Length: 110
Image (cartoon, rainbow, N blue to C red; front, side, top):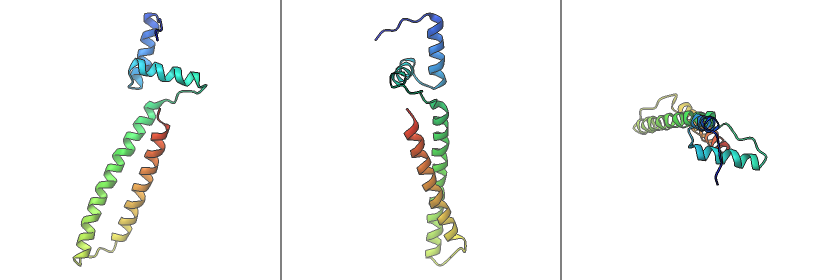
């Protein structure tokens, strides 16, 4: 497919693509396909940034799990912390919520 654009039009298109960290052709294709389907193209920059933050938080939660495993090992050796059960539930709940949020964000990305 060939689309003739003025230098000014192409510069606008390239800026829009760059703002979403997409190649110019990819941005144009996604935008055109959304228009054909009668949909407004989602602004994916913010969603991608949120997804990145969620994935980083998920990594931190996984590290909590490692610490929790160490705490369980200590518990099995007889050194029981009174807050161990609370930490275990909090860590599991946090990871579940982050997984759910990450899945929802992925489903919204183009």
